[in-house]
Structures are given as structure tokens and as C-alpha cells.
Amino acid sequence: MLQSIRSASKHWLGKIVLSVIFAFLIAGVAIFGVEEFFRGGSSTTVATVGKTPISAEEVRTAYQNQLQRYQAQLKRTLTPEQARAIGLERQVLSQLVTEAALDQKTTDLGLAVSDAAVLRAIQDEPSFKGANGSFDRTLFYQTLQRAGLNEALFVREQRSVIARLQLADAIVADLPVPQAMREAVHRYSTERRGATVLTLAPTVAGEIAAPTDEALTSYYDSNKAAFRAPEYRTLNLLVLEADALAKPDAVSESDARTAYEANKGRFGKPERRTIQQISFPDEAAAEEARAKIESGAEPFEAVAAARGLDPKQLELGTLAKSELFDPAVGDAAFALEQGTVSRPVKGRFGTVLLRVTGIEPGSVKPFEEVAGEVRQEVALRRAREGLDKVQDAIEDARASAKPLAEIAQERGLPLVAIASVDSRGLDPAGNPVEGIPDKDTTLPAAFRADVGNDTEALRTKDGGSIWYDVVKVTPSREKPLDEVRDEAVKGWTKAEIEKRLVAKSRELAERLDKGEAVEAVAQEAGVTAKAVTDLGRNQSRDELPSEVIERIFVTPVGKAASAPAGEGRAVFKVTAATMPAFVPGTPTDTQLVNSLRTALADDVLGQFIAEVQKSAGVNVNQAAFRRALGGEY
Image (cartoon, rainbow, N blue to C red; front, side, top):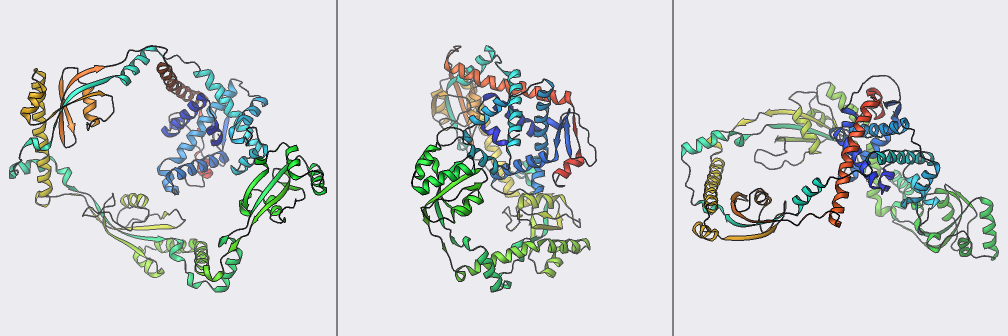
């Protein structure tokens, strides 16, 4: 389904459909929770849901779209290995199977969407409306072109979306929301509590003497896992990227000048022109209008007004040639003299007349000023072209069991030697190890391998490779007490303070429950009592952490209890609990009904989609799926 159509949908039910689809996408229920059959073959159909096929082209398009969305969110390029690690291919196939299941059900039920309904939906889409608020056909085609779509595909997808919404509407429209549910949510969200709080700082525990050898040994024996040294590995890494192969000094001046001339516009400010455009239904109408303008019978603006264009729509903007979407329009506009009108131009979206009302001359830096930059770019391009050849040579050397250190020396490439690193990227002193390329990918791979393994190269985001050798493995071990004595003393002291605070807080809470005055108990304990009111659930207030507030809400009014509060503890007595009365039909209740109805509809629709897939039957061709993704699955 088109992402742009999804985003454009403002219908609350459409949002539910999409949220359910993405819930299946993430959980994998859409495919992997139902019966599936994997088979080989050369078919281009990746899967079928009932009689509805999912083609390899649909899979490729959906995969690339989803990959681009992830990369935009993460603001980094994902390698095929990283995409596999997050289950991207499973998510995409789950999404497509869910949509196919809904399409199959609409077909089974005979649901159909009229041409008029599709046309109305397209014309009502805000993305296709011009400055005057009406549907703009030129904008429509430009948007489709940028998305790599044609009109037929867009209309077909829009028709499918509308049919799915009709089906969902029939299933979940006007779901009742029980009053008992609304009352329970009301009580939970509106209850407010008050309490008197005594905060016990670590100093309340008193002076903690040094532990005896027996006590320290006992603590160490009970917490050995906390003092265990992780596994460390010694690694050799060979990173091959175009930057490492680029040799700017080897680029001749002749080659550099040729590259400069071919891309001169990049080394300065390009010429920009202010361009006006009037669209016509055909060339004859455009030529007739041009004749009127040239003869002086009608000015350019009058012809535009007769075509229903206001001044804002008349002007394309002040643009460089490279910024113009239509090459034909660009060529014509940048061949005009200022103030003149073009002959009819047959562009991608119809016939137009152009006029240039302003020209901002461009400027280009001389070759001598950018020679170093040009040589670097030429060297990088050559290096990228030769990257595969070097990669193959390294792979051949690896196949002959050569270690990376020897390969790096032979080919003049830098070797990254990591003396000792754990799976978190830290050295034995606990400091981050610098110089590990693409650490999130390299370290997990290195810790899955073993000494002497024939490891597979990892791909970098720039198309290079990372080879790695595990030189040595230092197993995880228990550190003896003598090695971690200082750490063990700190741990024992902290545990002793906590034990004393727990005992003290229990004692104070028991005294409060027996009816002693809070002020008297606080004064005797050497702390200050503080009254807090209007506490809400899951909200930190007055330096009270959420753990304390959560405990206050599960403690009966008039009772005392305690909870951890940072490095200390808080002892409290609940003094009040209030909540406004539940009144059906109020604006707050209406808002709650709408929210709960959406949640209920989400659940119902999710169950329906799962049942549709189960009854229709899902068949997946694993071999075709792998081919559709170029063998990256």
C-alpha cells in the first residue's frame, strides 16, 4: 500500500487499520503465526493469500520504502546485515500479507469502489491541492513522479485502500464502550492522594565500620557474579574503503581539468532564473496565446488570468536549471532572454509557455582554487571503481589461509589491532576502545567467531568491507577476592547501609501504624516530616521518585509503608485519597469513550485480520522471496 496514501488518510478508522497492520508487521503474526508452506521454484510470485498474489516487484518496492524510512529515522545507512538483524524482510512480508488478506476478503465479499469515489478521494487529498485550495493536476503528476509512480498504479492502490476502509468500517464502526470500563479508567486517572513523608538519607544508617574478613568473604561468595571479569578478545581488523585506496597525487592535471570542466557548476554558484509558466491543454492553444502576447493584444498576466491562474500560481520561483523537475522546461527557460516568452514547450505534464523575469548570474571558482578537491574526487571515483577488484584479491588471499596482518602488509593497507576488548567495546580498565569501525556490527560478529575461523567480510555503509581475525580469546573468569577487595568493600558497605535503612524504615512505619504522631516519630529519628498533597499516579513530585508514589497509591489511607528513594528510603503515611465523581456524558467522558473505542476497534480488527489470514491460507515461496531481495534475505 502506498505510504503516501496512508499518511494522507485522516479517517480515524484508517488510522486503526494502519496501526493494526504495523502491529502485525512488528510482531510477525501476519505470516509467522499462521500455517505457511515454503517451496522452491522460479516463480516471480513471492506469496499468495487465498487467490491474491504478492509479486516480487511489490516485495522489492515495499522493502526499499521501509528501508528508507528506517534510515531516515536513524539518520544513518543500514547495511544488509543490520537490516536482517532488525527483521526488516519479515516486517515487509508481514505487511504485504496483511494487506493481501484484506484485499482477498473484500473480493470474497464483493466489495467494490466506484470510479467516482476514487476520483473524489484523490481530489480531496491535501497533497494535491494548489495555493487556491483546489485540485492541481500538475502538482498531482509531479508528486507521483517524485514517488516513482504512475497514475494507473496510484489509482489502483487508492481503490484498494478505500475498499479496506469500507471493510474495517463494517467490522468496528460504533463499537460500544462499557460504562464499567469508563468508570475504572476514570478512577485510575483522576484519583489524587496525600501523604506525610519522612526521607531517610544514607547518613541515618550511622557510621559503618570496616567489614571483618569473614563478613567480606561471605558477601563476596554471595555476589561472585558481580565481580566476574567478562570475556576479552584480541582482534585484527582490515578495513577496505575507497578512502584508503584513493591516491589524489596520482591524478594528472589533464584528468583533473577534464573532471573540473564536466562538473564546473558544482564549484560555485549556478545561474538562477525567475520563471513564470502558463499551462495549456494542447500546443495549438499555447501557440494562439503566444501570438496574442507577441502582438501586444494581451499581456502575459492577462493570458494567465484567463487560464484561471492567480499570480502565486503563475511563478515557478527563482531556480537553478538543476532544480527544475522537467528537463524540457529547464532547457527552454535557460535559453530565453529576460522578458521574452518561449514557444510552446511540451513538458512532462502538458504544454506550457514560459517567461523569464529575472536572471541571477552564476559564478564559478577557477580550477587552481579547487584543484585539490577535484583530484580527491577523481581519486575516490577511481578507487570505488577498483574496490571490487581489491576485495576479490583479499578474498583470494583469505581463501589461502593468509592472516590479515600479512595481507595488510602486502597490499599496503592499515591494520587495526585491538589488544583487548569485551563485547561492550570496553578494555580491561573499563574504558571505551577507540578505532573499531562500525562497532555495533563488528563486535557482535567478532564475538560469534573463534580463533582460526574463516569469517565472512562485513559490508560498510560506503560499499567497503571489514575483515576480522580473532587472534586470542581470554575467557570470562571469576576474579579472586584479593583482586577486587576494594570493590567488594564498597559493595558490602552499600548493602549494609541499605539493610539498616530497611530495618529503620520498617520500625518507623510500624510506630506510625500504631498511632504515634508523625512529628514525634520524625523528631526522634532526626529527620523532617513533609506533607505532600494532590499526588497523581506515575508522576514524580516534590523530589519523590515514581517508586515512592507508586507505593503510596497501593497503601490504604491511614496506613504507613516505605519504599526506596534514591540512595536512601522514604517512610510515609497516607493521609487522603480523593477522586471526582464519574458523570457520564461530560466532555471528559466523551473524550474517554472515543479513546477507548479506538483501542477496542484496534483489538477487534487485529483479531479479524488474523482470522482472515488463517481461513484464506498463506503460502510463501522462500526461494522467490530471497530472489526478490537480491539474495540479501
